[in-house]
Length: 367
Image: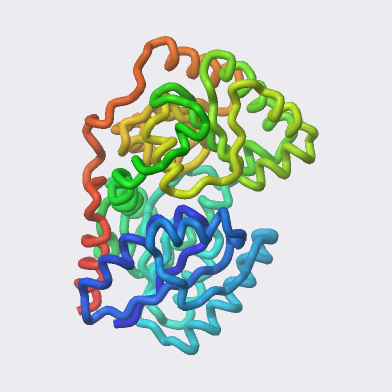
């Protein structure tokens, strides 16, 4: 059985890594890795392959960035060539980026089965490009592998046949647990001169937060005020940095005392920063999940989330984008002295064994 696994954005690498390891235990599976090239610079891509032990991709489409239409079209054209040559039995796509949807459409039209890892997540906000990708991918994929029970419920509500759906758990947590001990080797805290539970970690990259001058300026205000109480660490996504420079906010950020502006960090440094943070402020979907698994308080600067289980059963709080509301939440967290609890109960199947359940599901439906 030949399986082509598609990876593009950084979180995709974390999702394919445990799958590639699990495939090795099954002689009947020939697994190949395809990198679409969405994040094409070293810091945003190659370091993740190195740290996670992911082999060099068998195929690299080199698509790069562009508008949604440009990126989707390029992926479809190049991916079709790969499928015509390789004729795999399955294509495994992960997450909700443009290549996830594009590769699913191409494989479906060529009669090749598609398994979607992290299926069923819904924010019910059609203004989010990722939501469109999720809905379209799930509507035509052959096997829908959900990270939480609410994903099953969402898919059934949309009319997806139950026999296509498998609740397997959260693949991100497999990688997180595998790498957690290794992250203790990271020297990033001592390099920055910060202490465990003595700083706030920030990650902001979503277009709705960083593409408009007023919104990004509001976040700068949040960082300025919070850093007066506690050091803050922000590994700055290239999109965020480019916009900060364009809006004349970068020098202002650089002048903030107690704010550590970093280049994008590797996975081990990132886990170390999350695991030891007093609080995390983010707009990332994956970090909502990882902080829940680590027992670290998380404030999500969005109006909605496709991962509500991180609120109902996790450490996440949805705080919107109003700077006064966010600052109020930050103040309350810093005042109560609670720095997280790694022993909190985790959502079901967030146990580090999701890759095993995924491969088992693929084998079962192939028989």
